[in-house]
Structures are given as C-alpha cells and as structure tokens.
Length: 408
Image (cartoon, rainbow, N blue to C red):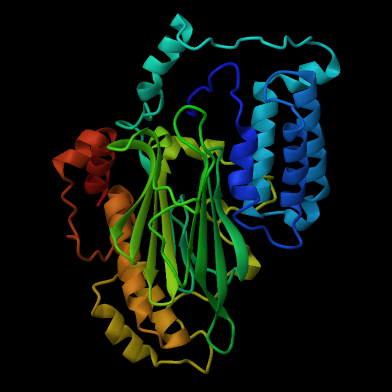
C-alpha cells in the first residue's frame, strides 16, 4: 500500500505540479496547464499549502477548472495526474470538512518544529517508509508493449492493437505511463510506439515528482529536469533513472512501490514494460470508462487480426521469409507470431529485435508468468531455473512455480 503521508502536508505542491504540467508540454486542445497557472497565481499571492480555508478554496477552484477541461483532456496523462493529486491533497487537508464549515482550521495546526523530538522521529523512519514493505512476498505483475504494437496486459492477455495517437498505458496514485503511436507502412493499419512518457507522482518524504520522456529520436538518461534520482541517498535513491545500455535501454525504479519501468529504443521505435507488485493493481486510478491498456487491453475496434496472419494482401514481406528471419532470434509463442506480423506489415527487420527484447524482459521481470504463458519456450531455458536471489526476493513464488510444474 501507499506509505502514509506525513501530517501536516508540507508546502511544495505548486512546485510539484508546475515541474511537469507546465514544462513537459500538454496538447493544445487540453487546457490543464491553464488551470495549473491559475493555481500558481493563487500561491504566489501568499496562499500556502495546508489545512486552511484559503488553500482549500484554491484547490476547489482548481478542481472546477479541471472538470471543465474533462471532455478535451480525457485520457491525457497530465489531466489524470492533476486530478489525482488535487483529490489526494484535498483529502489530506480535510478540505471537504473545512469548506462545509464542519471543521474550523487552525493556521499552524500540526506544524513540526525543526529539531523537535517529533521531527527527529519523522526523519528516523524515512528509510523504512520508502522501502516497499511487501517487497519480499508480493508477486510481480508485468505489462509490456512492443512492435506494431503488441500488448501483454497485467492479466496475461495478449493482443495486437492499432491505438493511433496518445493512450494511457497505466495510471496509479504513484506512477502514470502514456504511449504515443504513429502509423507504420503505407496502409496505416498498424502503428508503432514513437514516444513514452513516464510520470512519477512523487512522495513528500520518499522522492520528488519527476517526468521521463523518450522518443524515436532520443532515449535520455535523465528526467526532463536533468536529474537522475531523488529521495534517499545517491548510492541508494528512492526514485532513479539509469542506463542499462546507453542509447538503447533505460530503467526507471521507484523503491516505495517496488516498481520498474523499462524503455528500449530499437531502430526507430520504442518498447516499454512496467513491473510492480500485483497487490497495487487495486489502486489503479481513472474513470471506469477510461481505458488503461495494461489493465483492460485495447478497445475491440482497435484490435488487429491475430499476429502471424497476413495483415493485408499487400504484405511488405512474405510470411515464409518473415518466419525464417524471426526464428533466427529465438522467439516463440506470441512473440514469434508478433515478429512475423511486424515483418509482413513493414519489412523492417528491427522488429525482430523488439520481439526478442520483449520476450527477454518477460523472462527477466516476470519469470513465473513466462513459464506459464510461453508453452513453446526459448532461451532462457524452457525449464526455468530460478536463481536463489530471486527466490529470496519472492519466496511465495516458489509455491506457484511448483504448482505450475506439477500441472505441466
């Protein structure tokens, strides 16, 4: 579960919001940045964050402004994030009770004096607070997107989607991911990912709000503000982005929810995966009718024919040639089918590497899921031999693995 926020809320929401909502860029038709600018004007006028009438009224105006943009901003990552943050901060400051008159706020209620015993105790437990407590027992949930694009949901469903434009991959109280896909090939029946935006929503004690953006032109090794970590110490940060392979593979980790986001640049396109504890799936945010690809998959009307079948009569490569090339990369099951589909659709052999990387990532980040889903297997070995380090990290998975082996 999300670690409890300290009481009272600290000043700094303005900075957290503006860091990304005003600098990361928002679609012209979506006015989230205008709402944030109005909020900024109020804080510049002297309204400080806290359980006060003035601050709650400012949050209420922000909420009303966001609601007016809902129709044009639905599904946009910054709109979803702003809504989640404002709701969380309003609740934390008891704004509903203050605005209704049920609670009379005190201007200095709950302030921790620097150097006080309470402040020292709060600092002492920060390290425990910022390490996910269930990390040694929680089973991992894995979602991945690669190729034209092909999607594996948290539930283990595979599908090939068109999803042209910007789509939310995931939205939780802690992290949100949005992908942008562009047409591939002259017939525009398939797309590939050209931009990935990862928004770390931050924690008042465990790490700053950060945004990472990758594109078909660049796979940065830092967040958009130039930093590479926040929270904790440089040797053991709570939020971090690092290069696994310069210009090709970046890993973003968030310790307080035990989450990993991996972004790869292969040829002109990107792949992305996210792994987090399965128990956190109950905290996914957003409206009930808003699709999060990792959770619900893509809309039925956005799904393409099953991979491996000829997508159109004007294929860029024959199926036999595509199959030959893909098998050379030791991909199997859905990853082989997806590779064949991509080569027939585009003729771009870099999609062989994309399928290979996606299957490798599944084995690395969700080996139990790989053992269950990849019936034909491939390298890593068909009979998975988990390392002792992995079993120490996820001891409960040993029971699952034994059950799978018995069933098999």
